[in-house]
Length: 268
Picture 1 (cartoon, rainbow, N blue to C red):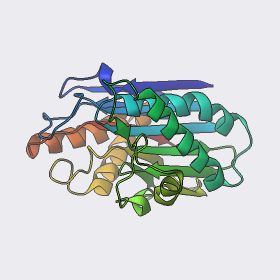
Picture 2: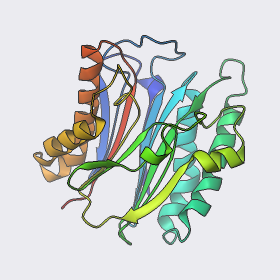
Picture 3: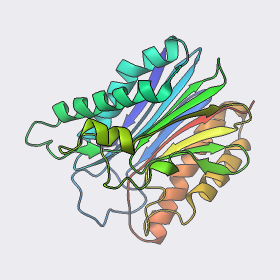
Picture 4: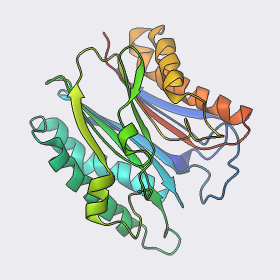
């Protein structure tokens, strides 16, 4: 099994977009297209990653608040502890019952990682998509306001039912309780047949007054742009295009935010 990740602390400069790809999977990360105008701890607090196996792939995006520790911890823990079981074992039979304990374990891991005085207060959103191409099934989960777009014809945000979470829910929050996380988290599954691409993005794409006016349309345009690339570059070009559209909106507003993107290109 292989994996890749990009961490915000490694990409603090406003403007540039970092990107990695392996075949039909890609991730992109940027500190944003303009400086942040709100209080923050680190210049770039997002983290993204993917894992891949013959059976499928796992995509992750996380948007931390109060420091980058929470997002990078959540992404690392899921890649190292959940990806092998979810990709090497049989497809999930009862996805909500499997993923909600994993989200709680990720929350507790973040809590342990943020006990040092210089890391306290760091918490994160999380969106994940597990693709079991061997079974043509898609499994998604989300905590907070990051996005999971399924693109067939139009782009549909599968994380929308969980947004906003009242009260807002973050992995690593000191006040979060397990029953509240179970209630707030989106956990669903669907068929992969007919899906052109999956695009996960943090709210640097969509934040009111910062990101694009129509996130689903922007993702649809990015996927259309990616489709014109050579087959082995379509995921990479799509990820870059989503980040570029986000950064352009930041410059226009002008008000910045970090943007993290993960893409799986499924159309052959």
